[in-house]
Amino acid sequence: MNNELHFITDLALILISAGVITIIFKLLKQPLVLGYIVAGFLVGPHFSFFPTIISPASVHEWSEIGIIFLLFALGLEFSFKKLLSVGNTAFITTIIEILTVTGMGFLTGYLLGWSILESLFLGGMLAISSTTIIIKAFDDLGVKGQKFADITMVILILQDIVAIVMMVLLSGMAVSAHFSGMEMLYSIVKLIFFLILWFVVGIAVLPNLFRAAKKYMNDETLLIISIGLCFGMVVFAESVGFSAALGAFVMGSILCETVEGKHIERLIKGIKDLFGAIFFVSVGMMVDPHILQDYWGTILILTLITLVGKTIFSAGGALIAGESLQISLLTGFSLSQIGEFSFIIASVGITHGVLGDHIYGIIVAVSVITTFTTPYSIKAAMPTYRYLYRVLPDSMRKGLDNYKLGGTAQRDHSDWKVIIRSSLGRTIIFSVLCFAVVFCSFNYLYPLFPDKLPLLLHNTICAGITLVALAPFLYGLMTNNSHIHQLYRKLWRNNQLNRTVIVAWLLLRLFLAMLFVTIVLAKSYQFTKWVLVLIAVVIVLFILFSKNMLHRYTRIEKNFFMNLNQNDNRNKD
Image (cartoon, rainbow, N blue to C red; front, side, top):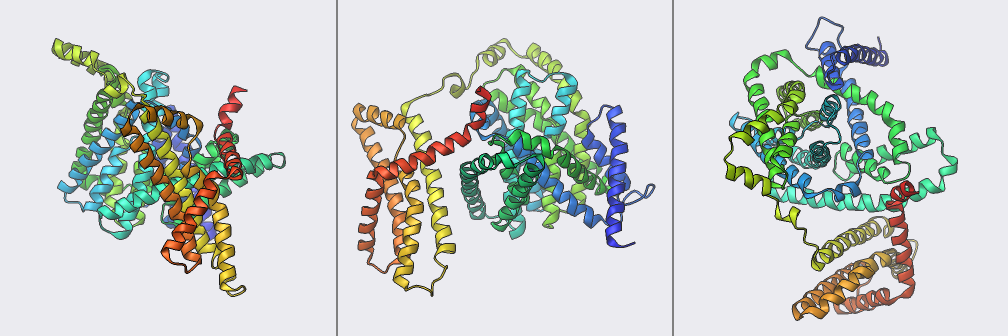
C-alpha cells in the first residue's frame, strides 16, 4: 500500500475510533477530550488489541495543524478590550498561581533528577488549568453566571495568554539548549514588540479590507481568507523566531475585533473540532502503559501537587486580591487540574528534543486523573469553606470578612495615573511603529535599484519616502489627546515639581522623535553629526507644528478607533 493510502487508512482509523469512543464518553457524561485521548491510546503503537496506526509521523504533522486551529479559535474568542476591562482579582490570582505553581513544578522536577529545561517545562505544564474541562464542569453543575465562575473564566483567559508566552520563551530556551537571563529578557522584549506591531497594524488594516470587499464575500470566501490569514501569520511568526501557535493566536485575536469575528468563529468551528480531535488522539497515542507502571510514584506526586498545590495557591491569590473566603475557595478548587495547553507545551518540548517521551506520558496521566476529579473538587469547595469558617477564630473570620486589597477597595484615579497610562502607552506604541517603518525601509526600500540612480538621488528618494511614512507616527509620539492636555494644564498650575516632570517627559518624547529622524538621515547622507542633528530638529519641529500633519494623523487615529470599536458600535445599533 502506498504512503497516500497509508495516511487515509490512519485517518479513517483515527476518526472512526474517536467517534465511537466519544459517543461512549457522552453516555458516561465525561469530557470529549478524554475520549479522544482514550481513542488515541487504543489505536496507538502501545496497544495491539485493535488495529494500529501505520504512519505516526503523518498523524503528528496533522496534529500540528490541530494546534494551529485550536489557538486560532482561542484567539477568535479573545478580546483585548475585555481583558483590559476585568478587575484586579483575576490578574492578581493568575500571577500568584502561575509563579507559585511553576516554581513548585520546577523544584519538584529538579528534586526528581530532571534537567533544568525539563523542570521548567514541567512547571509550565502544571501551572495551566484546562479551559475545556472547567467549562464542561460548570455546565454540568449549573454554576455558570455565579461570581466565582466569572472570575475563574477570566483567570483561564489570562492563563491561556501566559501559556502562549511560556511557549515562546520555552521554545527559545529549547533551541539554545540552555537558560540565560539576557536571552529571556530579549525574548520578552521581542515578543512585546511584535505583539504591539501585529495588533496595531492588523486593526488598522484588516477591518478596512473586510469592509471594502464585503459585497464580494460569501461564507466560502470568508472562510478561505480567514484561514489564509491564519496560516500567513503562522509563517510570519515562525520566520521571526516565534511558534506557529503564537501566530495563529494573534491572527485570531485580531480578527476577533472585526465585525466578521463571530462569523469567522462559527465558520471554522467544524474544522477546529476535526483537527483538534486529531491532536488529542495523537496525545493518546503517546501514552505508554510501561511508562505509567515505571513512573507511578512521579504521577502520584504531580497529581497531588495539581490537586492540592494549585487549589491552595489559586484560592490564596483570590483571597489576597480581596475576594471573600467562600469565593476564593470556589475559585481555587475549580482550577485544580491541567489540560489541553499542557499537552501543547509538552509537544513543544518533544519537537525540540528536550523532553523525553516518558514526561509526555506522565503529564497525560496526571491530566486524565485531575480531569475526572474536577467536578468532585468543585463540589468539595463549599463543605471545605463551611468547615474552615466554623473552626477559624472569631478575630480571623472578622478579618477575612472585612479585608479588601487597597487597590480594589479604593481605586486611585489620580491625574498622574491617567497620564502615565495614556502617555506611556502612546509612547511605546508609536515607538514600535516608528522602529518598524525604519527597519522595513532599511531592509527592503534602500536595497531597491541602488545602481540605477546616482547614490545621492537614490538615498534622497528613500529618505523622503521613509520620513513621509514616519511622519504621522512621529506626530503621535510627540503629542497627546485633548483630555491629557487638560490634565497637563491642571497639574502645571499645582506646583513646580509637576512642571519639571512634565517638561522632562515632553523633552524625552521629542528626543525619541529626533532619534528616529537622525537615524534615517545618517543612513542617507555623510554629513557631520551636528548637521544631522540640526536637520533632524528642523524636520521634527515642522512635523509637530504642521496642520497638514495634524489632519493626516487625525484621520489615521479616527480610522483605527473606528475599527477597534466597530463591534461595540454595532451591538449598540
